Structures are given as C-alpha cells and as structure tokens.
Length: 97
Figure (cartoon, one colour):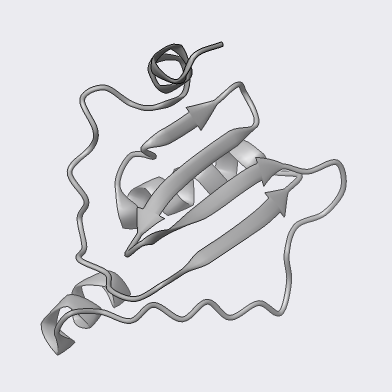
C-alpha cells in the first residue's frame, strides 16, 4: 500500500477541526476493553478522531504528537494521569469543562 492509499484508508477527510490548541510533544496509547465507550468519551472532549484504522484504533492529534486508543482484550487503564499543556489558561478551562 502506498502512502496516499494509506492516508485515504486511515485518516478522516476532511480532517476534523481540533477543539483545543495543544503545544509541546506528546504521545500516549491507551488500551480499552470497552473501546466504543472510550472513543465516545474522548470524542466528546476532543472532537472526532482524525485517525481511524480498522475497527480498533482511533487517534487524536495532541500538539505535535497523538493520543491513540486501541481495542484491548481485558480491562482498561486505571490510575492514569494525562497532562496536557495548553496555549492559554482559558484553553485549559475549556478542556476541563
């Protein structure tokens, strides 16, 4: 598969407009048994995913990196803290709402 075919198969077109402006380097992958519920939650906060590979991978660009959710076989992350660095205090308050 060439790169253009890969992009057409796995990325939203048109690309969703990000709801928040993040900055800094970031990358996190989380596995969820309750994958559909997790995608619904993160979509509510971050907007629609920009990366959609198959039925078990969804991703959102966060600054120069990605937050990726994968379909897990058992359980979900617990006792996890994710830190986002926002452009402004107002942007941080908007994410928290």
